[in-house]
Image (cartoon, rainbow, N blue to C red; front, side):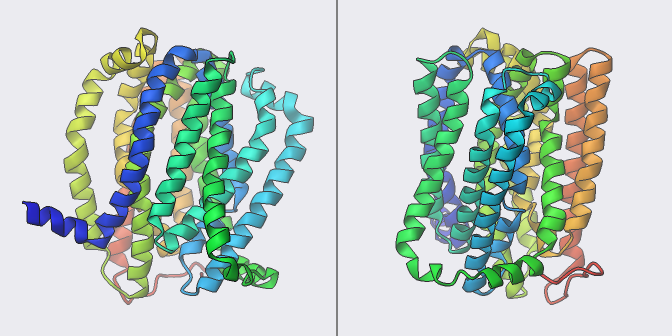
Length: 437
């Protein structure tokens, strides 16, 4: 038994995943403990405003790099990778300036569309947050390419601790959602600065590789990412933001707050583990593809092990979620626990599928992935509108979670079929008119 554990630890894949998970677990455990306190400092209305801010940000960050940060891992040449990092950074700056030009004159209109005047002041922070997230994800993907997993873990820890401590500190002295939102921005700043400080000091030579002509060439070469991945990301993130937008405008900010709180408590640990597997598997499978090595057996093993590890905890959480939320966060959050019960099947499928969501990028199937997410968006809107028409938030959330579970399950089956149909040594079919990336 001990020998088996040692062999697992010697395996580079599991060692890299463990490095990411172990580092960020410290920060995430601290974050969950902080939420035991935050749930007693902030109201459900505060979390509703915070949910609106985060979901607006989840949409704007899709444009922050035009999804070129995903391409950073793909080139064989490190020089190309550095120029893709530079291209992503330039786009982030441009998009953030453009957002500022939109937010200032159209602040009132945006508030009316969202059905919330409380979000008005916080819209001015969206451009800054968008810039910081764009730079953070670009540096993280470049660090992933270089297998600098301790650096990624350190940046994640800095981001999470800065976020949590600011939320706690401001929550004790300032009324409203200010602490929640400033905490996010502060955490984003800390995470970016950690990446920037390390890379700026360690890789000054590579800064000389940056060349605008090369960036333009690579922008054309990897044009699939803004053409399909960006719009797929917009569809996907807007689809995920629908409950907050619809609950806030058709029910109340408090109901949006219950949903936001329940979603965050469920999604944090799933995002921690699935995100670590995504980063390591993406880098690993790009290497395997370059070497024309098998990928499918490893994917099947991952799915089988994940189901074995997570099924029982998810079932128990599904049965006792309201009681767990009431015990940890106070009786007023029992309602958020009921929402969490409904979301669990969908979040379970996310835990299986998120680590593999780069597979369409490997085989130039971003257009199909975008279409699948478009269908999911339409079905999710339909599910939520059933709840609005029936004036029952539970029914809307049940339909939303149900169609999400089915559509994400379909995506997982499609990923497996892609791997079966593209064995090592066989070039993936190219969409007519697209530049090979």
